Structure formats: structure tokens, C-alpha cells
Amino acid sequence: MIWIDVDTPKYALFFLKLLPFLNCKTIITVRYDKGYEETKSILDKWEIEYYLIKGYGGKEKKDKFLARLKRQKEFINLFEKIGYPKLLINGAVADSTQTAFGLGIKNIIFYDTPIVLKPNYKQIHYNLTPVSKLTLPFADIVYYPFVIPQEIFLKNNINAKPYNFIDVCLWMKELDTKNDFRDKYNIPKNKPTILIREEEYKAHYVQEKKNFIYEFIHKIKDENINIVIIPRYESEYLKKEFPFAYVIEEKLKPEEFYPFIDFFIGGGGTMTLEATYLGIPTISLRSIWLIHDKYLVDNNLMFWTNSVDEAYKYFKENLGKKFDNKKYFCKGECNLEKIAKDIDIFLNESL
Image 1 (cartoon, rainbow, N blue to C red):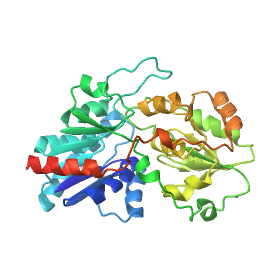
Image 2: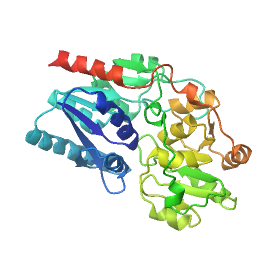
Image 3: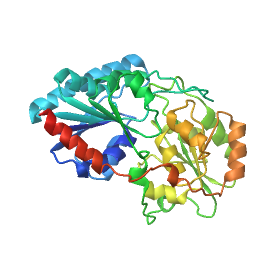
């Protein structure tokens, strides 16, 4: 039996593409808590069965640690009822990785955020993030996209294998354009639509919540545009501060909104990659700098800044444009079939 632990919306989409290729009984556990409901919503949208293992913990380290302990206990309680898995697959989740290691369960990790770079990087360092330290060294195999330098894993003595695409290719290749979210939310179609995604400010790798995105929203509020905000966690404070914007709490499928937006402002990773992949003019106002950010900026695929004035200038110059970026996201075939076969071989050899 294979156990897949899903803790973020990105890995919900990712593992949805892996599931059809796995030749083994599979159970899915999902991290869920109040204010952290997107991952569950995605699996509900695709009608995937799962077990809810609650516990997020929020921003404080102590609360995160207590939530991890709670989830670890719940994993064991679940396995006592349904049986113990032979293999864990996850996206570098400390809760499940530590449980698997303690129980002698093999672990395969897919991951694309092993380190955080300094803004305006000069050179890459090889120091793992805290979560990477708690997960990657305990994995039997780590799979990673080609944009991450292999030296990061070699320097940290991690058994890692690259694949030839950036993850968003898996679910962004073909988008149906039938269901326009603007119809559902009564958003005017006679003016440009700007989509804004908050930063994941409670994540371990974000030092503090910055105001870049919120200042930018105020900067563009008088433009003749639709401003749409997708919250990261809670949403009520966004509705109060930005009554002129559309705050969408529902988790939509990519095909329901990307074909109908004209500009993207990102504070995170996955949606910034998705928008860039589709050639939508994109600004990252993220407070941190990751490997994918470096790759996108190096290839002039997006604009990154922590200056609201610089962001506004780029916005005015590029609103309405469309770019051809897909060739930068995949070097060959873009699917998980070969990796799934390797997982099958690894599982059989481990029994």
C-alpha cells in the first residue's frame, strides 16, 4: 500500500497527475485546519477520496510543532485501523516524513523549494531550509525539477533525481475555456481583470508578513480594471480593506480563471509559475527569492520587485500583452509515467 500525504494546494494538483500511473493500492491523507482549507477543496473538486488529518498550527513555531505531533499520532491511529503502508510519497512534509522514518516506512519526496536565496542573488548557497532539513535527508529518493542545481543535493548528501519539466506543466497543458469565473461572480468583461494572490506569510521560510501586495492594490484601485484577490488564509480582513475588489474564497480550477485574466500579481510560487507558463504578464511581489524566481527572472519570463513604484511602472507598460513562455517549462515529455514506473520498481525491490 502506498501512502500519499498532501499538505498544499500545489501538491494536491501534482499528485492528482501521479495517481493514475500508480499500480498499487493508495491512500491519501490531507492536512487541513481552519483557515487552511484549499488543499481539501481541490481534492473535493476532483472527487478524490482521502483521510483528513487535521493540524496546521499557524505561524508560530511552537504551534507548528504541536500540530506536527498531533498529526503524527493521528497517522498511527489511522494505520492501526486500515493497515500500515509500505511507502510514503509526499512533498517534503515534516509530519509524515518523520512518522515514516520512525516506523520504517520507505519515503519518496517530490520537492522544489530546498533553499531560499537572498534577493538580487549573486551566487547560490547550499544551505537547506528548516523543513528541507527535517525531510530530505530522511527520504530514500528525492525527485526535483531541472531548474534546481544538482549540487544542492550532492552537497547535502541527498539521493536526488531530476525530471525534465517544471511541475505546473502537469496540469496546465490544456485548459478548457468554457467556464468563465467572471460570469459566476458578476465581474465585468469590458475591462481588464487583474488577479492577485497573497504571499504564504505563515510558511516557515517567510520571516514576516510584508505589505508590498496590499500597497500595490491601493496603488491600482483607481485604474479602469477589475481587481480579483485570491486569499492565502483568512479573507474577512481583505474584504474590509479592499471593498472595491472581488475576494474569491472558493477554490477554482485553473481553467475557470486563467484564460480570462489579463495580468497576475503573485506573492507565492505555484500560481506565479502557472500564470507565467500561460504567458500572462506577471509581477512577483514575494518578499523572498527562490530557485524558480531566479529561473523566471533570468529568462525574462516575469518581473520581480519589492518596490511598489517599480511594480506599477511594469504594470502600466505590460497590461494587455501576451507572451510565449511554455518552451522554458519543459525539456521533453511532461508527465509522471516514467517516474511512476520507477516508483513501482523501487517498491517491489523494497518488499
